[in-house]
Length: 407
Image 1: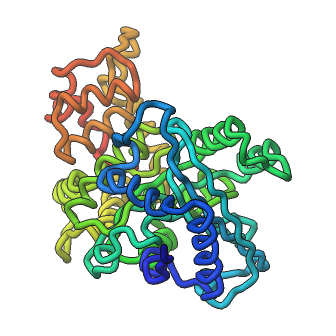
Image 2 (image 1 turned 120 degrees about the vertical axis):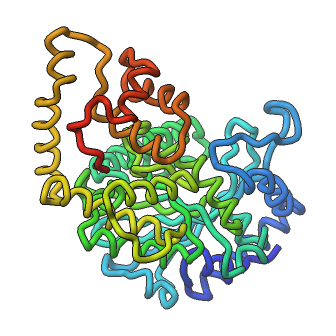
């Protein structure tokens, strides 16, 4: 079984050829000791590769009777903190390790190649499904128009210190209960963003950083600036690759809705739905705010355009794009709203929260049906609102003084 450096570089960035040779040596060792298992790893991944990460795929065998081969390869760079991604292809200062096991379905998490390095005391971690690097869907991935789904997670320094304190210096990989507990803590306490691109991961991430530096108020860019926490770990995962644009849009829409849509998930960093629903929202948001799009809206430029529309909208309503001043202004408008005052005086429990108002407007502009919107609003706040109230809100008959903005 051959490791394919062009795939790794298409998905992420180049490494020193010595790294590739050592990975190949690891694969040769596994193939010799466990013949046929690498091919089985690829076969087991095929069904998962066509859907989002939260949809369970049917695997052969009953319950815990079948064991699935799993291989994780880890590369950790040991250079000083000034290391840059652009210099990794020259670096041989790293250590490499691997963990092969055969797991029952309840413990099976797939196979991965992970890479890590420290920069400014922040651990930057990159994870790719190993199956892609063994040649799965190779031709599709190498096409210039192929898409990938990726995710970014941000863990605070405080929570990273907590994890480190719970992980012994000689961490026993056989203690699966401890490993699972740490993984659950990480997932529950980290911020998450999901995206899609047909560029390399590095090109797309650089665009995020440019939007962050130009003052974007989208939650992901604010998180990258450290507004929500002191960053301890910044993790980047290639979730799916070698997709057509349609496949990528469909999977991204499901992935965001199930994992990272803000207001549904407190730590979610996606402010709008993914996929075609997100594109529809950006188009409608521009139309409602009077923003003139000088370029055709596409899947690739949608986020940067959303940054522009959001800033245009905030300045139009508040003459500023400073989030704290905007929140204070919204609080004043909220307190002055007649529906707020009436419901407070009568102690009614069926008034919308601001979060519900914003979510309803976003999801409606994304093309969600009213029944779905109402169901999801109950997840945000279990107040006794009904369809009539929702329809009046969406028609602008209630809460009209509360601006339709993205914050």
